[in-house]
View (cartoon, rainbow, N blue to C red):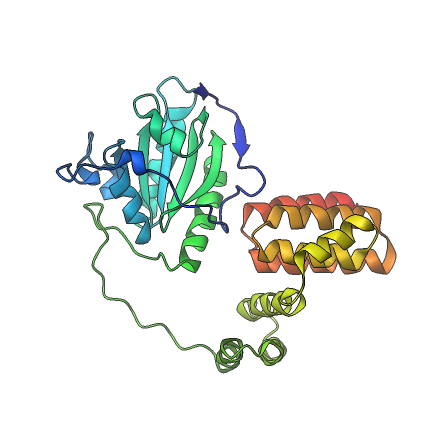
Length: 320
């Protein structure tokens, strides 16, 4: 296994924040029944229970906690340049987030099978597990503000998966009484009810009226973008759309439809790359139509998602 100190965020399909990948296969890392709890692994749980030292024997129990809180796995080595600095950043952020996620530190030299299970060949590497499924984050050493962006995107993904627990000082899920959710504003509730009965036209109408009442209503804006995406792509044939786009790269309608379907299918970076390239090769009204669709998809994915920020820079370059 190699070590590196440079930066390399996860590649296509591997950025954090929105996508879960296939289930972790750790059948060979099963923990003996008599093994101590993960929080009692060597070194103990520093940082108020938000950090644990993970071994091959304790790993499965740590993964099981990912149904309650996101689990961030930091694979490192004493031989990796900058690894200590990255570990300090992760510990500091884990403490600051006060139990919203669990940091599991893995010595990849002593426990190479964990790295193999995640298909990690270079350390330091940081991944996450949400509801038992892996979410690649980044490799190498990043500045603290960039690490913060990845963690914020991870917490956003976890919330959408219903993983919203919090750890207590012992590193176990805290027993907290759930606060009742505040009621939705009337037009938002109307939109939600329409979505529940699969009436996307009515949902879109409700969100538009909410925006007329309050143009700064970000939730209504995002809700409308999501509903419009479902309306456009809900009944489309992905393969037929791809065939049309491949047959005629200048077909803007085909490019827009494939991008919609890619976002729905979790291929966010592919969708963004396709539309940025289409912006480069079009002009006038068609270019503006593609730009507007790309901005709308940014709303769907989320403004703080690292893939959106990268695509915004690429769009600016294509336009100017």
